[in-house]
Structure formats: structure tokens, C-alpha cells
Image (tube, rainbow, N blue to C red; front, side, top):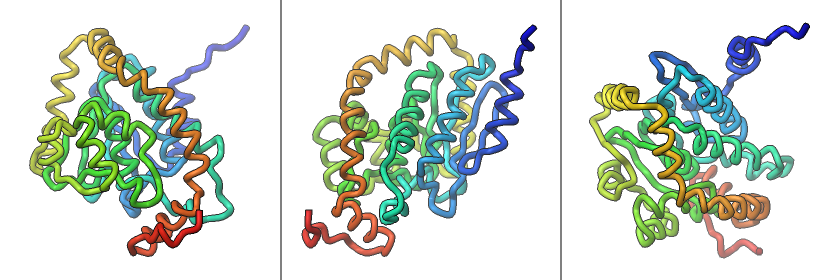
Length: 277
């Protein structure tokens, strides 16, 4: 006779206790996931994305959870982008683990069928903004800053950045955001349709909680259907995502990106034209 396993307890024992980059809690039908790397402005590395994916998957499978909130620890950043430190390390490479982490996290967020709120507190830049774009709703504090950083560091926001920005801010503005890598205030982002609501910093949690309560009054089935229907057109961009991530195997260790990452770490402007490609 095969003894039935307790999946809930197994998750807590085998996964939750091993989290290094995130904090995860479930309470009052809300799952809260916090990127916990405040010393590096909650920069995303492969481990971070893997742990985020595991937490989202758990919330997806938990019938007691109706809403998911993603945020960053501290008050400086939701996430300031991808962790660039490994780019300049010749021993590290863009391998299948890197690719899978991106696919797994995006799939969990797009397919879980539950509303995901980005609670943005501070910088939401580069890969951090791409994570924000994967969320269904965004509530930000007034001091938050939004933007992309790809071309500034020799990269490209191919992980749902370009694809989703187009639907939020329009074609011309998306090109401006990606090409110029300018920074935008939370109010500017709200006016562009990039953000749903902007509130004073001290009211951020209150507003997020209010939206969670409102969502929990709705039919979970209806919200799930609405999410999938609203995702339909942007889902057709999936081949663009796979194409972009495959290209990342080449440009993530290209001379231009090594120069961009080195310049970022050295806090100077990059000189891409001195690099031999």
C-alpha cells in the first residue's frame, strides 16, 4: 500500500526553508512574495528567479489563495534589475539553468490564473521592470522610479519588457523607454498607463491591502478567465520571447555587454565604440 504524501508539508520542509533570495508568506488568502536582496537593490539573479517561480507555483496550486503580491525588501527598490556581477566573471556562462529560470518564472506568473499585484517601492528598473510587466496590476509609492536599462549596459529587455511595454504605453513611447533608458517618476508612469495607482509612500501597504480585499470579493473563476482572455494577444508574443532568450546566449557575454556591465559596476559611463565586436 502506497502512503499518500502530504504535499503541503513537503513544500514547507523541502523548499520554503531553503529560500535565500526571497521571503514568502500566505495569510488571509493573499500570498506575499518579497525579493530579499536589499543590499543590491533586490537585483535578480538566477537563484532569485528560481525561488520566485517556486513561490508563485505554490500560490497557484493553493486553492486558499486568491491574490499574489510581489514586492522588494526595504524602501529603496522593488528591483533595480538583473544582477550584472556574473557578466564580468569569465567562469560563469549563459547556460540552460539561466534560460529555464526565465521561462519557469514567466510561465508561473502568466498561467497561474490569479491576479498578481506588483507593490513597487523605489527603483523598478531593467529586469525589475520586466518582472513588474509580468504582474497584472501595479501599485507604486510616489518616490518610485521606472525605466529600462538594456542598451545602457549592452543588453536588451527581451524577457517581456519590449513585448508588454507596447501594450501599456504604446509603440512610440515603448521605443523611447527602451532606446534611451531614461528614468520616469511614478506619476509619469501612471499617466502613461504603465502603473495603475500611485500613492504616498506611507499609504502603499494600505492601498495594496485594499486592492487585495476587493479582488478577494470577486469570483476566482471569473478572474482566471478574465486574466487568460486579457493575456491572449500578448501570449502570441511567446515566439518572440523564445527567440530573444536564445539570442541572450550570445549577447549576454558579448564584448559590448561586458563593457556595459563593467562600466555599471565601476560607476562610469560605458564606451561601446572602443569595444571590438
